[in-house]
Length: 110
Image 1 (spheres, rainbow, N blue to C red):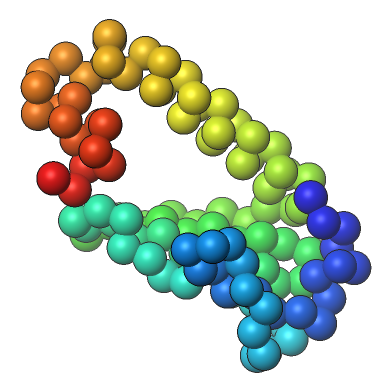
Image 2: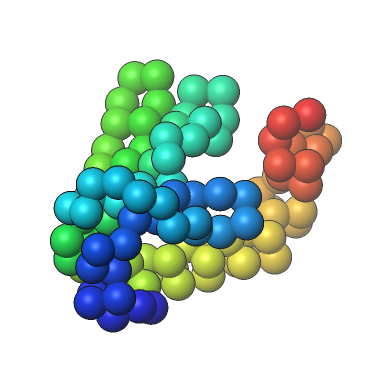
């Protein structure tokens, strides 16, 4: 994880190839622009001073959370670990129906 002083004065925007430096508000940087990730789900992420802000919204509810840099690193590790575990058990325990298995292995957009 980058140290906080490496973020100062830089603006980043999420792209399909990672984060790209862009010009803009020096106080707030877009790490991931508002991105539709499902039929009714949207995800976004911003950097402001010493905090990474994550927001998730659905048709009926939304949530946001602020992370210090070390907390963000632990959060990402935790999500990656959970995703790895889901993939390991997904075909056996979680996704039993053919439609669920299809959505799991194709990214859900079939």
